[in-house]
Image 1 (cartoon, one colour):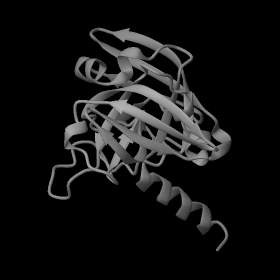
Image 2: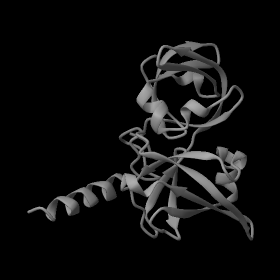
Image 3: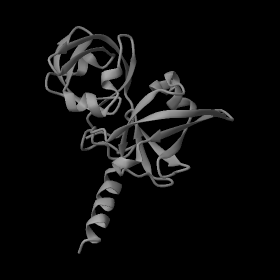
Length: 198
């Protein structure tokens, strides 16, 4: 489980395909603190550390992960948002993030808003995910608050600190991002849909 508060920006150093799996080697400042079998969020995707060498570590993404996220789009030298799993005795500064991406979205607009930035994203509404005004959303692993919620799009406001310390500073119009919708909202929506059949 994660919080959506990014710890470090990693750099993709190597990509190796093995049948339907993709092995990603990441260079990061947090590598010396990692251990084999540890969970790390990469752009919001929970992946397991399988190898550590100096200041680089390797994780493996399976086919389902590649199909549901932007992990398969990564290239060497791409910057990724990193977060280790939360400690149970630590503050939950973001919101509850599972590291299980629901779907991707496309950045459709970036506006400078008097020192901050407004990013707008559109996603496939046929997958039945929803956002709500002032609700939580995870974009590329970053815990954010929804503004301007619509049935297949939403915006988020990015403050300078978040812009500088996540890969939002690299995002441009047309880029694909990972979305994890609020887990509480997903359960409420599921219960509501089931109640219609009782």
